[in-house]
Image (spheres, rainbow, N blue to C red):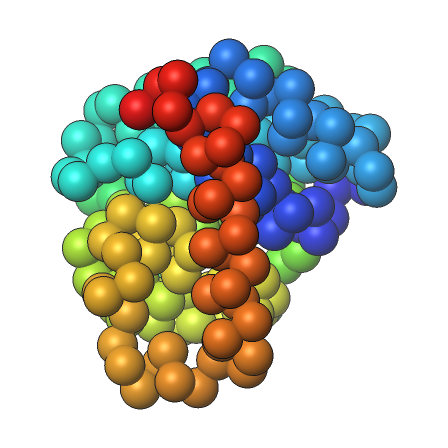
Length: 212
């Protein structure tokens, strides 16, 4: 099973282990293995956790550093996904539709040169999801709204992809980068903020003072 339902669960992993990358892979694997034993969704989850860990401590985006960190995390579980992530400088140079065709081909495991259609948008395939999220984020790294719009434009499983893209963008840019009209529309936003504050305080108690 290579569905993407495990990836949102590692948001907490990326936040908790952002200063301890050596523990990130093990934590992502444990969280993903609740429902998935296949190494591909584990690799996708580890890649997303590493991306989030990078974003939450960075004031800027250095493409090569970001790609290397995410690729290393994925490579522990899937060499194919790691290679696909390293190919992002080329993917980003393509048109949006062509980029998604490449992502679709990688997810399907097709040969180089094959050009699958992309009529149904991003599916719930974990490999396609993580590559689409990384693409949408890197295409618009400093504009939260445009990054999320890019995810929505692709079609398919847009709720998952847009949510993951938004979380990654928000981690880099901060809460102030989220347009006020979007933030106000979030259901139970006060509860979410409270839990985020509690997670931060718990992290500071357990790990923060020794490392930062």
